[in-house]
Amino acid sequence: MFGHCRNFDGINFSKTMKKAYVYGGLFILLLLANLVSSGQTGRDSLIFRIETTDGNEYFGKIISEDSEKIVIQTENIGQITLLTVNIKKRTLLKSSEQRKGEYWPENQQSSRYFWSPNGYGLKTGEAYYQNIWIFYNQVSVGLTNTFSLGAGIIPLFLIEGAPTPIWLIPKFSIPLAKDKINLGIGSLLGTVAGGEDSGIFGLVYGTTTFGSRDKNFSIGMAYGFAEDEWTSTPLINLSALIRISRRGYFITENYLITSEGDAVAMLSAGGRSILGGIGLDYSLWLPLGGDSFVLMPFLGITIPIGRID
Image (cartoon, rainbow, N blue to C red; front, side, top):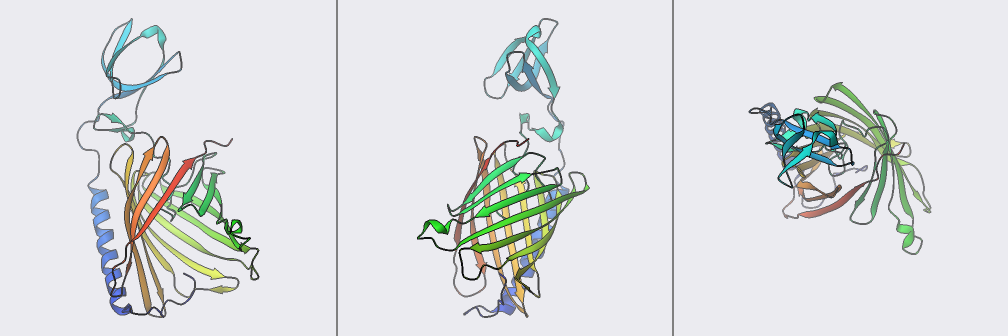
C-alpha cells in the first residue's frame, strides 16, 4: 500500500485506471440515485414500544384500548392483551425505527464498512471487538460522541515469537448535517513489536459520508507513510452501506491506488448479518486489472462489548 505500485507483472495499468474511474463514476451515480429516491414511501405504521412493570418490552401496533387494557399486535408472539396498571411506559417509535410495519432496531455497527471507516462514529461508551480471519484483532471504544479510539494486534508472537504488528486508530467524527453528511478524520499508527526494524508506519485519512446510518456512501482519501517517507499520491476509497432488512445490510468497499501514473483497484461486494447482536461480515474481493480473474473471500465478526461508562 505504501510503496510504488508500478511493478505488477501482467497488469495493463493504463486500462486499469480507465476502468477504475469509469466504474467508480458509475458507482457514485447509482448510489446518489438510490439515496435520493430512498425517502419514506407511504404512511408509517404506528408501532409502539410498550414497557411493563415486570421489566418486559413489547413492540407492536395498537389494535384497541380502553381504561383497563390495551391490545397490541406484536411481531413475534402475535396479539396480546396487557392490563393498563401493568404498563410502565408507552413510546411511539421514530419513523427511522419503523419499516413496513416492523420494528427495525438502531444500526449499532454503522461507523465502518468491512474495514474502512466512514463519517459516523461510536457514541460515548460504546465499544466493540472486531476479528477478521482469526488473525486480525481490534477493540474500538467511543470516548465521546465525536472521538473514538481503536487498538489492534495480529498476534504473530504466538508463532515461535514472530514479530507482531500492533496499531492505534484514533478517529474524529464530525456531523456537518445531522444524519445526512458526516466527516471522518483519523489515522492508523502502527509498529512491529519484536522486529529488527520497529519504526512507525500507517496512514492518515479523511472521508465524507452522505446519507443516514442505515443507507449511505462515502468518498475517502488516505496517504500512507513509513517513518519519514510519505506516498506521493493518495489511496481513494469509495464505499457504501444499504440496509435491506431488520438484520441484513449490503456493503461494498472499494479502493483505487495510484503511483507515478500506474494504478490498481480493489472492488468488493458482500453483506453484514446481525445474529444475536453479533455482526457477521462476508464479501468477495476482486483485483481489477491483469489477465486473471481471482476472487478473494473476506470473513469477519464484530462483537459489541456494551457500554463502557
